Length: 181
Image 1 (cartoon, rainbow, N blue to C red):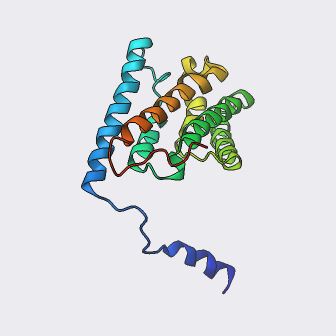
Image 2 (cartoon, rainbow, N blue to C red; image 1 turned 45 degrees about the horizontal axis):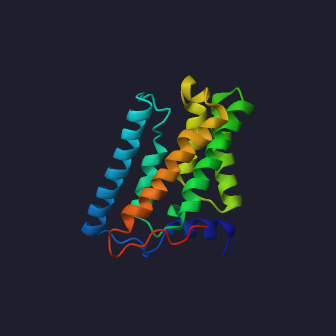
């Protein structure tokens, strides 16, 4: 088989479906994600009172979908959620500091984050958005510098994980986390 035949044959996909949609899972995911994002939003409102996006970052929404929609996924485990977000935030801050050209800095941020998570075993796809936000965010976010990696990113990721432990385990068939490290 030639290279091109092998290459294009990989794109056909298959019938394997690891995730089975169901109403119970949808309702549980809805409840969990709603509660956690509401708690995060209220904490931002309470402590900061500023909805500029500096403290409530969009990638937390994606993390909630992973932690509560697919709690068994390796990408949803605590090491990946916290480590992936912090590493990605650091990658984004570094890319922003290194490169004055915003498109190149954005590309570097996501590339550094993906490679870093891959090398450290902390793959958490929402981390790519965390890295990107460090570059495309407003001046208030840029003013945080390296602190962005710890507050809001590290603290927010820890809250998601802790609430994931508390809420996921309320449901009898869920067990979260599968692994801490």
